[in-house]
Image (cartoon, rainbow, N blue to C red; front, side, top):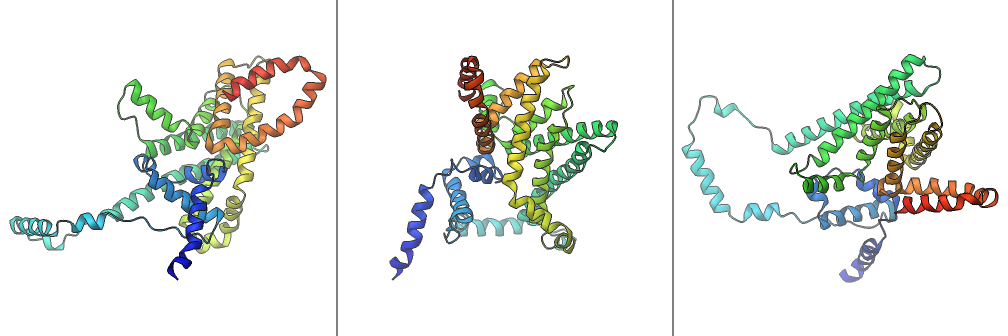
Amino acid sequence: MGDGDDDPQRIKKIAAAAYDYESDPRWAEYWSNILIPPHMASRSDVVDRFKRKFYQRFIDPNFVVESMPSTSASSQSARPSVRSSSSSATENARPHSPGSGNTTSAPPGRNENSLQLDRRSIHFSVNAWVLVVAVLGIIPIVPRHLSNKAYRLSLLGTTCSSFYSLYILYRKPRAWNLPAIQAWFQTVIATKDFIRLIYCLLFLTSQLHFNFALIPVLCWALEHVAKFLRRNFAGSSLYRKYLEEPCLWVETNATTLGILSSNAEILLGFLLIISLFSWQRNVIQTFMYSQLLKLMYHAPVTAGYHQSVWSGIGRSVNPYIYRYAPFLNTPMAAVQRWWFR
């Protein structure tokens, strides 16, 4: 009877292990939102467990994810006599102060949770501020001088937020030499925070002013604020009355926001190419942004959205090129070879 009951779960476990997570854009987004230390993220058992949880959430809700075996209990009970004897000796040797009986220390788990909550609160505060400022910068009816300031401040806020998130998750290179910096750079280059950091730096240091550049910033801040509110204020009456439906809409339309952001990012690339024929040309920025678009096309966290948008552009443009401008086939082929390299 026990084997018969376990057969469905065993089959589900095999199906979960055989599922192609890398081709599912939801897995890349799910994994990018997991906040764990880098040394834990490199462990295959930890990654497999999160893959099973992803499979349970998005593919098969009836799949049961087993809890990870805890090694702390066994390590704590391995030497009880030594620990008890050492603790008793320490207590006997410790001098008693008059006020020592009233002092209590906070549990380390609580301190760690409060520290993590403080980090998330700081990140949320910056993103909420960016959300408000970006709205002011993108609305056409706002005065131009105020819109320009809001444009710069929103890019600056997202830069600080992305840099802070990168530092919290990946810290700094273990050594300030070329191999260590290269290893650290390879770890962070395909992350969502690094892409956002470079994106904002490119437009923050540019003399060109594109309101379209705030669309991805607005989408990123909106998504982060909605997730934070749903996780931490779900029990608040104010949240349930005014913010629950907007936050739920943002979470259910995350794919739409990702596609909107990708369209704006690609449109900015074409605008930068057009600007090369004006007096405001910036060849270095255009080249750097083309490299960033290439990274967005290949990075797992953004590849699904960008590949979808570029496929639509190709289906619309290629027939006209083949029919009316066949001389562009050779340069287009060269660009595609560089792009897919």
